[in-house]
Image (spheres, rainbow, N blue to C red):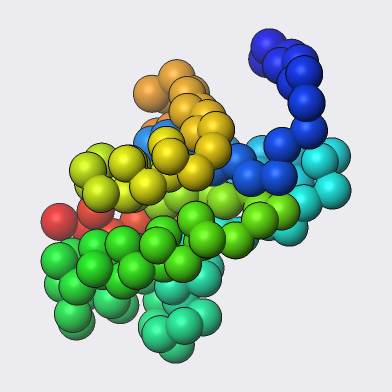
Length: 132
């Protein structure tokens, strides 16, 4: 792991990357070190809808989920003092990408494919795009 030196404190960071790369775990640790609040975008959507992400995909569809995701991103870019763990597909959307890049640093996390596979297999049923 490479250490990143920051010249000035930041009040907002987004983490992106494929499912299973560690965005949530690293996001929590980063927020603690930077004394910022941590928000997991998927958990935020689950709290606001009262539905688990796999259920949103199953019963309402991916398009509806992506709409909820865009609304949540619009809300979060207006706030300060956050480390945001994005969903695995959030940054693919052009509007989300534009808003996020305008807002602050977006850090892409990577992991070896074997590592990702091992991690996602530990949580069956939690990755709706793999159910397909």
